[in-house]
Image 1 (cartoon, rainbow, N blue to C red):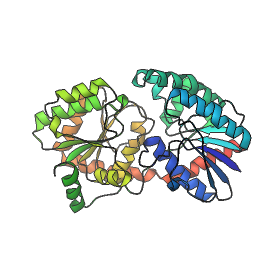
Image 2: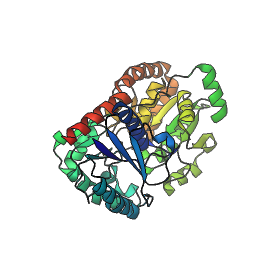
Image 3: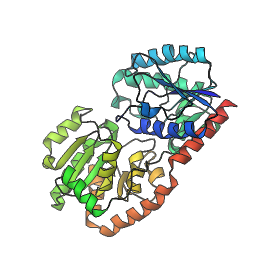
Image 4: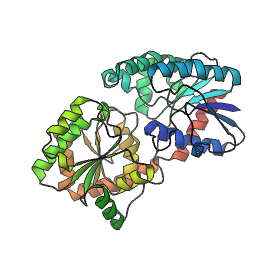
Length: 374
């Protein structure tokens, strides 16, 4: 069987949640199934790291698809032409985009529908493109893969897809994420947080990630606790909207906020492992990979009580209301003041993270692709 794959988000040292998912799944299914051929469709020069095995054939198709007009051109013109020429058994798309101008059976991974719930969080044309095309992609798909039961029900409700055609396949954490010894933690804190313990945020600085309220909550925590704790934010070093920047500029304790920019996996796993606590207060998530990464590092988690997050964390996180600065601050203060709770969350996280495995993710993804091909 020949399977064409949308690999445009396999970007060296620039992969976020969906790219991480694609990398870990494709690395495994290509190696585990040498009897099948995989055609990787890139939209730019690729890194050889992503050619996982001899049954992978890379193809670069232009233009680079990083704008709604270019999304359309790449998928509906360039990719469609390639699929119609090659005629693979399946087109697998880890970022959910499909080509409507082909009859090739298609399987998208639709991670979440944040753009349906919060369309104003995205640039106007991007938001329109997603809301216009993703219902069509869902209707075209032979099967749909998604990353949580929450997202499955959201897709069923919004796109009227039969639930039996949707497979839930959880994400996981890379093996780099593991417990750090105290000597390692000290070295990492010396490097990133002036030797102090720190709360950690990991993700792009996107409105739905709720950094604005996290900054406000951190200011409250510093004011009331007198703690030396820092707040380390890992992600692209820019603000996605002016509200976050305004809050940051007005902070009393903004000198205790550290922006690292984007980190590679080795660096990020070290920063995660040395954290006092992960604070993950997004108001919309399809899964939330950093939650599992933190639990695997034996780092306690403060997390939102909305969307898919309670499904992922189960009872292994201190839940807060992401729309309430006071609720977030109370959660952070409790972790500081209650070592027993912190230790309890670490133990529960150690148990919960064993429910997630990239090997299992790849196996279930392959099962879904096989069902779609029959």
